[in-house]
Amino acid sequence: PAGTTGKPWGAELDVTPDGRFLYASERASSTLSAFAVNAESGKLTKVGHFPTEEQPRGFAIDARGRFLLASGQASSALTVHAIDRESGALSDLSRHPVGKAPCWVEIVELP
Image (tube, rainbow, N blue to C red):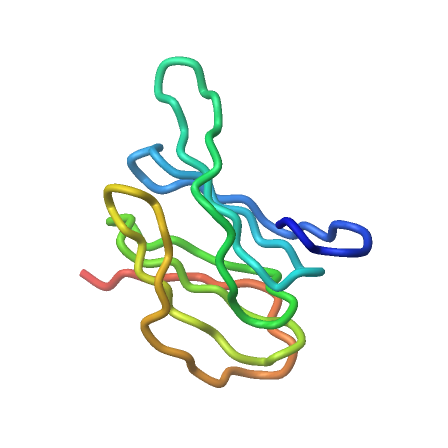
């Protein structure tokens, strides 16, 4: 994001199940970057940068593309972000403590 200093330190990329939005975690700025994906060309258009847990490493998007859960390797917490289905913007819903230095997030959907 603009104003970030230092070397970029990306960790993970993921796309919503409908293929409309791509998200990337960036550990140096503790942000999630969102991009709209053009279905025909694959071209990315920046949606924005959204603050999340400190030093985000792993994150996951639920099977319906409604939520993004991001863990912070330095914060030892997880934030649940709502995904705006039209714009791809993220908003914080809740924050939860987890084990020390989480590295990934797995969403298990029960039948």
